[in-house]
Length: 388
Image 1 (cartoon, rainbow, N blue to C red):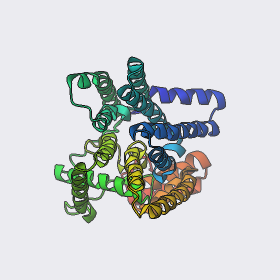
Image 2: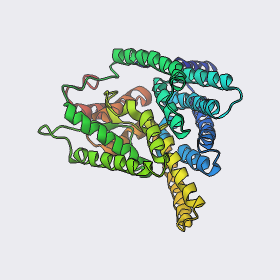
Image 3: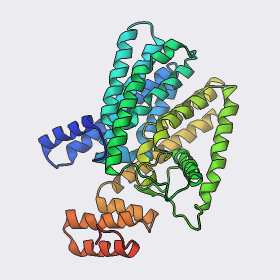
């Protein structure tokens, strides 16, 4: 099906053997992995921040309730996200233990490598982990020595093998698209800047969420105006990181974690039919959560007068995220609800119109509704052969 994730598929096989098509066990499994990941984020950030519980708690709560993560948990088919993250975090935790502790170094290292292997067997997106290890080394002030680089060889070898497997499996199914005839190199640059900007903004203001973020229309060889503004935002982030380096490593490390873990889906290499997806933020947002947590302890440790205001702001954000997530879960309950929600955000989304027709045809057996939505699809896109 265009993806190689045998361990994830194995869990589906077990569940189907036990309960058939009943969805409850499938959802419970997703929720189990997500809650486990919340705990693992806490322990990972706890170790990364030199055992600061406040940082770990803030990062774990943000991870657990962020509205952008609903897609990864509520959508059964995105089991691979919650599963690969589970082993991904275990690998990072044991690499930290390997880096920080003198005891059981070989054991911790082997567990880290094996957990990375299991993560790759759940989803190929885990190939970014070796780059994240350098973020840990940077925070631990490790000098770039030969031994430091050779220790990464097993990680990079595994990443290379599974990266090649992913490319061939997705290429055969058309998941990796050749967009050269549609977008020039310059236009693709603006698209990458746009995706990066939207991911950052939606961390703080997760509004207008949708299951489909489509590519923009080209009008007279021009992208929409917002695409040309986004490079300025990227430059602003770069300047912010540069100015922060003299005082702290936190901002660079957190954003590097974010960038390394989202790099493969920033549409530098076009993957799938969407410009971005909410599920792609599941791991990367941990890096930004780490920055927020460290900012809080900086304000607290230095007894800055804005601490009460920051506490109120974090609580308000927690309430806002919780309510938004609760509402967003309802959108993922049924196919027609999901696609109608997508249409409200983008009325010209022919894919959503077609999928509503498919939903009524296949699941509801409501042929009048199916005919109505398929006809609407054809009026938008006469070349849609599946609608015909």
